[in-house]
Length: 459
Image (cartoon, rainbow, N blue to C red; front, side, top):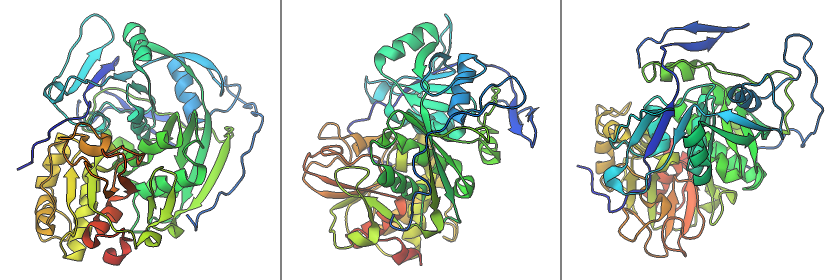
């Protein structure tokens, strides 16, 4: 059984939608085809090119005067304009709006409401809003999604413009269904190469943040492309976009493709229309990475850009491991942890806390069979490894909270965590040390009591 949680993070959501038809779209080589939904409802990495500033080249045909990036197209579409450019201030119509409920765990849930007089709410508790939004079908390509939490940018994995706003801006959205936004410049990250089986998306984003710093993308869009990105499943893409805010980014975005459409098939009956960057679009900067050469990484205290190779930190003794949050508490994150526990056949040497992001993830932990396990579920493997019983879904210790918050650091301890921030006091005690890492690295570290490169167990 799941253990109880003393405090739950404000994770409920208010969802506002304006559409009601059962259509979706897929890209072809020359145009978008519309079809009906099936169901209604480092050290080895370098920057390829320096920052470049270039004039926009006009299109030779069509009504569009200038090529646009994906984010520019999304905002132009939301503003009902033929084109926008970086630096423009535009009133954008909002497709989906999310607001956090701070009244406590009893009233946390996801709410859905159409713009207008009639409100329809679903108060059922779902879990951490950023993951529940996707699971409930509220993240769709081509749309504008705003929310009163910085990690709203997670939804950019679906090819939509998603960013966090403040409560004052939320009032404008609730009252008008629109918001004035400044069009950001776009940084383009081209990630190619076969993804090594010891890496996860958390390693990719830690590499990027370490490359450009926590201020490197301030009020800019971060667009992720390349063969490596195309190979990632939706939850891994969500991890990538989730942490663009840790680089100062306004939003992160991944182009919608067959992986996106497949994920959405049984989750939404609403129409959506993806957009894509033009071939001649102008980017503020472009970075290229060969992911096949990347090694497992950590972000050392007390900043997400304090990057280091996991193997370089092998002498750092740890006191605990935390696997959870909107960044590292998804189904695929726990399957990765279970895979490594299974490969090692060993027990943890430090307390290891497991906090699923949503109710669905909690169910998956207890029902999904881990490949190659002989029929075992994640929960069975975690129990055999000596982990703490998976907790009820919440943010839990990711945001600190009161002293009785589940897994909170109430002492000056060293923790390896799959969360997104390692600032002083982030998970509780202001003198605690947090090392951000992938579920693989966190699991390997739990087995040794030291920060450990997961290749020691996966190979």
